[in-house]
Image 1: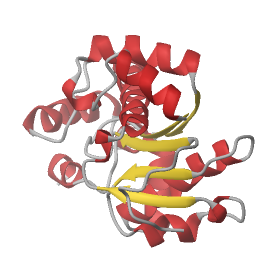
Image 2: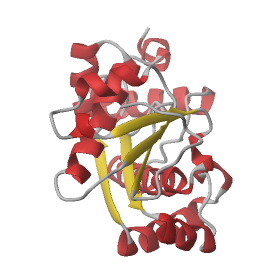
Image 3: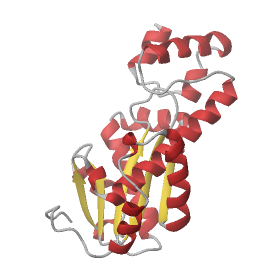
Length: 218
Protein backbone atom coordinates (compact mmCIF):
# COMPACT_ATOMS: atom_id res chain seq x y z
CA UNK A 1 0.00 0.00 0.00
CA UNK A 2 2.89 2.36 0.65
CA UNK A 3 5.37 3.72 -1.91
CA UNK A 4 7.82 6.59 -2.40
CA UNK A 5 6.06 9.91 -2.02
CA UNK A 6 8.07 11.49 -4.86
CA UNK A 7 6.44 9.01 -7.27
CA UNK A 8 3.00 10.62 -7.20
CA UNK A 9 0.13 9.09 -9.11
CA UNK A 10 -0.83 10.58 -12.46
CA UNK A 11 -4.42 9.58 -11.72
CA UNK A 12 -6.86 10.82 -9.08
CA UNK A 13 -5.26 11.67 -5.74
CA UNK A 14 -7.31 11.97 -2.56
CA UNK A 15 -5.98 14.60 -0.16
CA UNK A 16 -7.03 14.34 3.49
CA UNK A 17 -6.62 16.77 6.38
CA UNK A 18 -8.32 17.70 9.61
CA UNK A 19 -9.18 20.72 11.73
CA UNK A 20 -10.03 21.13 15.41
CA UNK A 21 -7.73 18.54 16.95
CA UNK A 22 -5.87 21.22 18.93
CA UNK A 23 -8.97 23.19 19.91
CA UNK A 24 -10.72 22.60 23.23
CA UNK A 25 -14.09 23.84 22.00
CA UNK A 26 -15.81 22.53 18.93
CA UNK A 27 -15.68 19.42 16.76
CA UNK A 28 -12.97 17.46 15.04
CA UNK A 29 -13.46 17.69 11.29
CA UNK A 30 -11.72 15.53 8.68
CA UNK A 31 -12.13 16.33 4.99
CA UNK A 32 -11.07 14.75 1.74
CA UNK A 33 -10.76 16.21 -1.78
CA UNK A 34 -10.24 14.10 -4.91
CA UNK A 35 -8.50 15.64 -7.92
CA UNK A 36 -6.42 14.46 -10.87
CA UNK A 37 -3.53 16.42 -12.41
CA UNK A 38 -5.83 18.81 -14.30
CA UNK A 39 -7.89 19.38 -11.17
CA UNK A 40 -4.74 20.05 -9.18
CA UNK A 41 -3.83 22.82 -11.64
CA UNK A 42 -7.29 24.36 -11.17
CA UNK A 43 -6.82 24.28 -7.40
CA UNK A 44 -3.42 25.96 -7.63
CA UNK A 45 -4.83 28.54 -10.03
CA UNK A 46 -7.44 29.52 -7.44
CA UNK A 47 -4.75 30.06 -4.82
CA UNK A 48 -5.42 26.92 -2.80
CA UNK A 49 -2.70 26.42 -0.19
CA UNK A 50 -2.30 25.48 3.47
CA UNK A 51 -5.40 26.74 5.31
CA UNK A 52 -3.23 28.06 8.18
CA UNK A 53 -1.96 30.73 5.77
CA UNK A 54 -5.44 31.95 4.75
CA UNK A 55 -7.92 34.18 6.60
CA UNK A 56 -11.19 32.68 7.84
CA UNK A 57 -13.17 34.83 5.38
CA UNK A 58 -11.13 33.58 2.42
CA UNK A 59 -11.32 30.02 3.79
CA UNK A 60 -15.13 30.12 3.56
CA UNK A 61 -15.03 31.48 -0.01
CA UNK A 62 -12.52 28.89 -1.20
CA UNK A 63 -14.31 26.05 0.55
CA UNK A 64 -17.55 26.86 -1.28
CA UNK A 65 -15.72 26.84 -4.62
CA UNK A 66 -13.91 23.57 -3.85
CA UNK A 67 -17.12 21.88 -2.72
CA UNK A 68 -18.88 23.03 -5.88
CA UNK A 69 -16.19 21.80 -8.27
CA UNK A 70 -14.56 18.69 -6.80
CA UNK A 71 -15.50 15.31 -5.40
CA UNK A 72 -15.17 15.69 -1.65
CA UNK A 73 -16.37 14.47 1.72
CA UNK A 74 -16.42 16.02 5.20
CA UNK A 75 -16.62 13.94 8.37
CA UNK A 76 -17.79 15.99 11.36
CA UNK A 77 -17.18 14.53 14.81
CA UNK A 78 -19.12 16.81 17.16
CA UNK A 79 -17.97 17.24 20.77
CA UNK A 80 -20.39 14.69 22.25
CA UNK A 81 -19.50 12.04 19.66
CA UNK A 82 -15.82 12.92 19.99
CA UNK A 83 -15.91 12.41 23.74
CA UNK A 84 -17.71 9.08 23.35
CA UNK A 85 -15.15 7.86 20.81
CA UNK A 86 -12.19 9.08 22.85
CA UNK A 87 -13.47 7.35 25.97
CA UNK A 88 -13.36 4.06 24.02
CA UNK A 89 -10.22 4.61 21.92
CA UNK A 90 -8.17 6.53 24.53
CA UNK A 91 -5.70 7.72 21.89
CA UNK A 92 -5.93 10.77 19.63
CA UNK A 93 -3.91 9.27 16.79
CA UNK A 94 -6.17 6.22 16.64
CA UNK A 95 -9.22 8.50 16.66
CA UNK A 96 -7.68 10.50 13.79
CA UNK A 97 -6.97 7.25 11.94
CA UNK A 98 -10.63 6.28 12.33
CA UNK A 99 -11.72 9.63 10.86
CA UNK A 100 -9.22 9.48 7.98
CA UNK A 101 -10.33 5.96 7.12
CA UNK A 102 -13.97 7.09 7.00
CA UNK A 103 -13.02 9.81 4.51
CA UNK A 104 -11.23 7.26 2.31
CA UNK A 105 -14.13 4.82 2.46
CA UNK A 106 -16.71 7.54 1.68
CA UNK A 107 -14.91 8.55 -1.51
CA UNK A 108 -13.84 5.03 -2.52
CA UNK A 109 -17.45 3.86 -2.41
CA UNK A 110 -18.20 5.78 -5.62
CA UNK A 111 -14.88 6.87 -7.14
CA UNK A 112 -11.54 5.38 -8.18
CA UNK A 113 -8.60 6.50 -6.06
CA UNK A 114 -5.02 5.66 -7.03
CA UNK A 115 -3.38 7.37 -4.07
CA UNK A 116 -4.51 8.89 -0.76
CA UNK A 117 -2.23 11.42 0.97
CA UNK A 118 -2.71 12.88 4.44
CA UNK A 119 -0.71 15.18 6.68
CA UNK A 120 1.38 12.97 8.97
CA UNK A 121 0.03 12.52 12.50
CA UNK A 122 1.13 8.99 13.40
CA UNK A 123 1.93 5.63 11.87
CA UNK A 124 0.17 5.01 8.56
CA UNK A 125 -0.55 1.49 9.80
CA UNK A 126 -3.14 3.04 12.14
CA UNK A 127 -5.20 4.21 9.17
CA UNK A 128 -4.69 0.95 7.30
CA UNK A 129 -6.03 -1.07 10.23
CA UNK A 130 -9.16 1.09 10.36
CA UNK A 131 -9.90 0.67 6.64
CA UNK A 132 -12.40 -1.78 5.26
CA UNK A 133 -11.82 -4.06 2.26
CA UNK A 134 -12.10 -1.50 -0.55
CA UNK A 135 -10.00 1.10 1.22
CA UNK A 136 -7.18 -1.39 1.72
CA UNK A 137 -6.65 -1.55 -2.02
CA UNK A 138 -5.63 2.11 -2.14
CA UNK A 139 -2.03 3.27 -1.87
CA UNK A 140 -1.74 5.41 1.24
CA UNK A 141 0.94 7.94 2.18
CA UNK A 142 1.43 10.29 5.12
CA UNK A 143 3.60 13.37 4.69
CA UNK A 144 5.13 15.90 7.04
CA UNK A 145 3.74 19.23 5.77
CA UNK A 146 1.34 17.31 3.56
CA UNK A 147 -0.38 20.59 2.58
CA UNK A 148 2.41 20.98 0.02
CA UNK A 149 0.27 18.60 -2.04
CA UNK A 150 -2.56 20.77 -3.35
CA UNK A 151 -5.25 18.11 -2.81
CA UNK A 152 -4.27 17.98 0.88
CA UNK A 153 -4.31 21.79 1.02
CA UNK A 154 -7.82 21.75 -0.46
CA UNK A 155 -8.91 19.24 2.17
CA UNK A 156 -7.41 21.44 4.89
CA UNK A 157 -9.53 24.34 3.61
CA UNK A 158 -12.74 22.29 3.67
CA UNK A 159 -11.97 21.02 7.16
CA UNK A 160 -11.09 24.49 8.46
CA UNK A 161 -14.21 26.03 6.94
CA UNK A 162 -16.31 23.35 8.60
CA UNK A 163 -14.64 24.08 11.91
CA UNK A 164 -15.12 27.85 11.60
CA UNK A 165 -18.81 27.40 10.79
CA UNK A 166 -19.26 24.94 13.66
CA UNK A 167 -17.67 27.37 16.12
CA UNK A 168 -19.97 30.13 14.92
CA UNK A 169 -22.99 27.87 15.51
CA UNK A 170 -21.78 26.87 18.97
CA UNK A 171 -21.10 30.49 19.93
CA UNK A 172 -24.60 31.41 18.77
CA UNK A 173 -26.16 28.51 20.67
CA UNK A 174 -24.53 29.58 23.95
CA UNK A 175 -24.78 33.32 23.22
CA UNK A 176 -21.09 33.93 23.88
CA UNK A 177 -17.94 33.77 21.81
CA UNK A 178 -16.12 30.46 22.20
CA UNK A 179 -12.43 31.02 21.40
CA UNK A 180 -10.32 28.70 19.27
CA UNK A 181 -7.22 26.97 20.61
CA UNK A 182 -6.52 25.83 24.14
CA UNK A 183 -4.99 28.84 25.88
CA UNK A 184 -6.00 31.12 28.74
CA UNK A 185 -8.92 32.78 26.88
CA UNK A 186 -10.39 29.31 26.37
CA UNK A 187 -10.18 28.56 30.10
CA UNK A 188 -11.96 31.82 30.93
CA UNK A 189 -14.71 31.17 28.38
CA UNK A 190 -15.16 27.64 29.73
CA UNK A 191 -15.53 28.97 33.29
CA UNK A 192 -18.22 31.41 32.12
CA UNK A 193 -19.98 28.63 30.23
CA UNK A 194 -19.97 26.34 33.28
CA UNK A 195 -21.21 29.17 35.52
CA UNK A 196 -24.20 29.65 33.21
CA UNK A 197 -25.04 26.07 32.27
CA UNK A 198 -23.31 23.72 34.72
CA UNK A 199 -20.32 21.38 34.24
CA UNK A 200 -22.15 19.00 31.88
CA UNK A 201 -22.14 21.71 29.20
CA UNK A 202 -18.48 20.99 28.47
CA UNK A 203 -19.28 17.45 27.36
CA UNK A 204 -21.54 18.97 24.70
CA UNK A 205 -19.23 21.76 23.58
CA UNK A 206 -15.63 20.72 24.24
CA UNK A 207 -13.09 17.88 24.15
CA UNK A 208 -12.97 16.81 27.77
CA UNK A 209 -9.66 14.91 27.67
CA UNK A 210 -7.87 18.28 27.24
CA UNK A 211 -6.10 19.71 30.29
CA UNK A 212 -8.43 22.72 30.07
CA UNK A 213 -11.28 20.55 31.36
CA UNK A 214 -9.45 19.67 34.57
CA UNK A 215 -8.25 23.23 35.06
CA UNK A 216 -11.75 24.63 34.75
CA UNK A 217 -13.49 22.08 36.93
CA UNK A 218 -10.62 21.25 39.30
